[in-house]
Image (cartoon, rainbow, N blue to C red):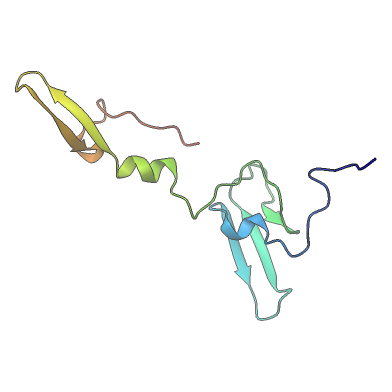
Length: 105
């Protein structure tokens, strides 16, 4: 009988998540071991991560735009019943009351 284990041991050759996470600050020195990582997503006092991270519940890929980034460039479809017009406007042209603001997550 074959048994397959999912989520077991991580391959040493895999890149750590912190290298592509928007919450990570990575400082590297001249030698390979001269490196430390600090995480802005952690809410408690010490934010330094002393090991390579391969799974994280707060991971946010900085190579992909965030929801805030997408909202800032979004075009809004609006209708104007007084002028009998329908068209797109930039979200930055709306007042704060008219905008749908996304949560920080």
